[in-house]
Length: 529
Image (cartoon, rainbow, N blue to C red; front, side, top):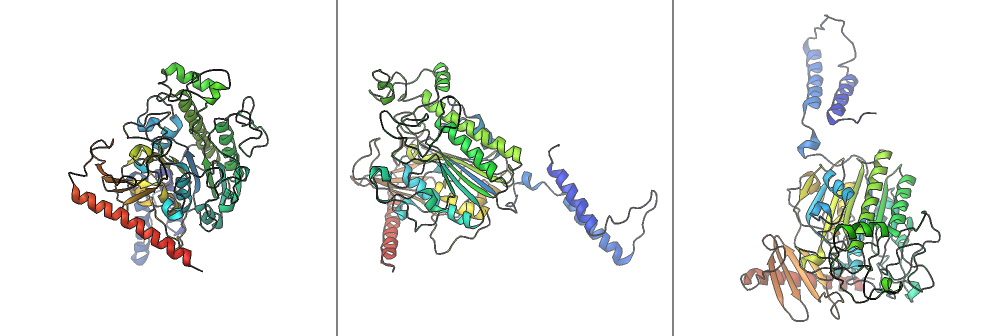
């Protein structure tokens, strides 16, 4: 069956419109021309003009004014872990190979200035699901395995909202919004407690240990760190591959839609550990950089000193590239399945990362620093959106956006009014879907990242604000304040605080006032009966 073009669809629509209004009710024999008069002539002419307008009006998709789809879209969110802004081919990376994600960007929209609301895992994931800044939620750092703090069931996630609107909801992979009973947490809260019908291949204990092959047991530990009770794939089952297969199964089971799939990868979190065949491929492609660690558990367990397996290479890391290619393969599997099921046009796909790349295993250039830092390398992330029914192909958007925006975006895409009693810190991207050059009606972006001690990756206790091209960082321990113009200085090398004292003071005052407002709101909420 040949694909249906937009002009073909308009022709069919015009024909149907004329037929339903009597314009095509009677066929005239050859050489016989009807002679309508009076009001009948005006009626036929009116319908004919409407039909001609339908036939010859500009293609809405090409004109960039395509409205939202009339039906609730399926939603697929693919979240990578610790994937830096510059790791994808569509962002200029020439070492890693990501053809399917690059194609997704070509079919939709790539954001140049997309941000995570925190430089580490748990706060970003909480903000993604709730549409609220981490400082409002109360999850400010990554949750330790024994943490009693968790994403409260009192919050309303977009999964709960979509579920109540008739969506089938599923979460595959990394949750990390709670401590774990296995480690002694008394308050383990799971995805099923927040609106997800299904929760598969998810952690039941601490994550990030490199045990990426079935049975997913790290070193001499007694149990798997995942809720996986059987193997599904032949050979040496790889975690990313298993998650990709589970994603395809979910899509097939719920193809009558609408559905929400949250595919939350554990990759490319260290300890990096890719499939051997792909690791060999990248070892041949480029020599790995110097290792950032003297000891590697995975190498030590096979009797080797230091890091001969290159798990901790600072640049051209073959394991990071291999893990990313496995994620990319999954994106290809998903888009192929959507094509097969005829769901492509009505499926909104978002691909992004929870924070910047870990500087121990990658270079985040041209951005400064990496995971755990409020410099751009820690919070600017790749962001690709594809929704063929609404988003024009090949769009690049430079408007600053934030993962916290995803919540209101999904609600508007599904035609669901937000609950006015719930404060949302994000804004919908729908205006950008219609026109990537438009400006969002938002205030500044804020970050709040207080630490009792510096992060083991080097991040410091700090807060930040971005307003237009200007970004200010306040370091809490020292009181130091730095100011950068990101349009001119994406690498944040030239501190402008002394050159622009008034702007510095204005932004610092806005940042501090924002924190005070959140403290006031939190105190008032705690006093509610």
